[in-house]
Each structure stands twice: as structure tokens, then as C-alpha cells.
Length: 472
Image (cartoon, rainbow, N blue to C red):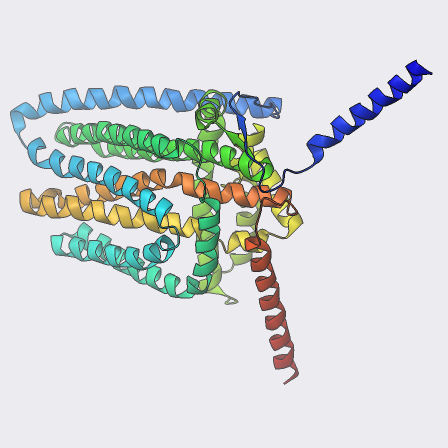
């Protein structure tokens, strides 16, 4: 009897212990420190192969670009020593100064975002059109055909940004609130990791600037100079996107652990896991996400402009939107959260995350989220500031260099700011994904439920008005 009672007691204890981890921690629970990496492996064989291939491609591209830059710098300056058609003392200083300016402005802006999150959304939406307009006026003042075209594009872009800001103004309150809630308690060492990432970005940009200058010096000897510059700009975009998304995966994993279970994970451990295990996934996402976002934006613009017209240009609007819907399921920035948390392949993580949003009814809320627009406008504003610095300097020193240097400075400033504020966007993504997985968790406030209720009321009101209008 004693043995039977002890056996029964032990089985009850085991059942109780098995039930304890399933219970959610209350909101006031002290976070648990998780310092040791325990990285799951949920990738298929095909996913592991693709991850390894893109990891090799990324590092191989860095090596080839480094060889190309070193060759162009040496060959360019040796060949230009006799012709003197290229003036490096007038070409390099404006661009290097704007690169340093990009790092300073980006780090300052992310500090402002962290400390004044209730104001930065409106500030970005109203300040960026002014800076873009100033950049457009500067391009027009340069006076060349190319600068005139770029200036007109910048002015039209400033107008579109202003109209979009007016149209999106009713969503500012919710966008500000979700940003403030998500970044209220940033992970430890976030500022340090951001600073290191910005420094790496500055060094790489300066390295590519040296290569672009070397290619410019070889224009009188080869017709491939423009092609070499194009390759280096592609490398700039891919590498800066990789740095941004590596930060994105790291911070989103740490914040997801905090939102879902009250666990505080060491940011250094998460970053080491990202670099060690997820380089291939981040490389894939760094290529797919920008392409899909551009195509989806084109499809939406075509849909808004074309409407129900029968013009040939707009005859495939539904086809464009269908393709865009399929692509966004296979590749979206929300998938980076599951990439970091569950070690999934990027396409699988994107599909799982998007299906989860559809299942819990968050898809419309995700589409109306202003965090992506805020980060984009922040990058455009920083790029405009850097373009103004480089352009005005070039106008004073050597006017013929002003157009190209201003364009390069804009690209560098845009990518640098997106890198600087990647942690804030990652926090918002982690909040949405963690909420979608467990909406009843006590770790979340009423921000998302209240917004969903507002959207449902708005839809019901629109349906009611449409029915009354049809009856009349």
C-alpha cells in the first residue's frame, strides 16, 4: 500500500509539473534571464541547402567586391596620373562628409525615436516632404539635364509624400501608440549594437566610395566604368539590407521572447546566433523583401490609378494584384521574426506568419500599419539631408560632380538611417507576431483589440451607408 501511494503521489507531482510551463506568466512577473543559446532547427533539407548557398554567395560577393574595389583604386589612380581628368581632392570630400553625416543623423534619429516615440511619427511625415522638396530644388539649381530630371522626380515625390501624410493622418494616433508600446523597454545593449552596425556601415560605404572614385578615374580607358559602379551600388544595397535585417532578426527574437513569455534574452547571444546560423536566411530575405515590396507598391499604384478602366496599360490590374498577394505570402518582413525565434527558412517563416495573421484577423491591421512608412520616410529624409550636404559642397567646389555625388549621398543616407532604426521596426514586428500567436496573453494591453474594434465599426458603417445609398 505504501508503494502504491508513493507511486500515485509521484505521478500526480509529474502531472502538476507538466502543467506548470503551460501557464502564462502574469504581467508583473520578473523576467527570466536566458543567457544560453538554445536554437531550434526547423528547416527542411531544401531550406538548409538554399541557406548554405546564399550564405556562400553573400560572402563570395563581399570578397569579389573587395578585389574589384582594390583593383579600381590602384588602376584608376595610376592611369589618371597622366591624364588628370579626374580630381579626387574635389570628388571624395563631399561624399565622405555626407557618409559621416548619414551615420550621425541616423544614430541621432534613432535616439530621438527611443526617447520621444510619441512625436517622431508625425515629425517624419511632415518633415520629410520639406527635405525632399529642398533636395529637388537643389538638383534643379545644378542646371544639367540629368539633375533637372532628378529634381522634378524629387518635387513630385515630395508632393506625393505630403498627400499621403494628409491621407494617413487619422492613423497617426494608433501608429504612435503601437510604436511607443513596442519600444517601451528596448533590449539590453540595443544602443551599442546599433552604434557598431552604423560604424560597420560607414566603413563599408567609405570603402565602396573609394571604389566608385577609382571607376570614375578609369572612364577614359575603359567603357566598363559605369558597369563597375552599378555593381558596387548593388553591393551597397544588398550589404546594407543584410546589416539591417541581421539587426532586425536579432532584436525581434529578443523582444518576442519578452512579449510571449516574459523572458529576457541576452542580445549578444541572439546576435551571435544570427550571424552563426541565419546568415543565409537573412541574405535571401535581403534580396526578396525589397523586390516584393517594390512590385506590390507598383501593383497597388496601378490599381488606384487604373481603377475599372479598360485601357491596355491597366488591363492586368487584377493579375498584378494577384501576383503581389502570392509574393507577399512567400516573402515579407514579418517572417524575420520566426526566422530568429524558430530558425525557420525565410519563405516558410513568411508563409506561416502571414497565415497566422489571416487566421486571427490581423491582416487588415497589418496592411494599415504605419511603421514601415515611418521607417521609409525617415530614410528618405536622412538621404535628402546627406544629398544636400554633398550637393551644396560640390556646387562650391566642382559643379560637374554635384549631380552624381548628390545621388550617391542620398542612397548612403537612406540605407544608413534604415539600419539605425531597424531595431524599432523589429520591436513592432515582434509585438504583432507574439500577439497573433496568443491574443489572450496578459502581456499585451488593449492597443490592438481597441484598434480592431474601431476598424470593425468603420467597416460596418461603410456597409450601412452603401446599402442606404443603393436603396436610394
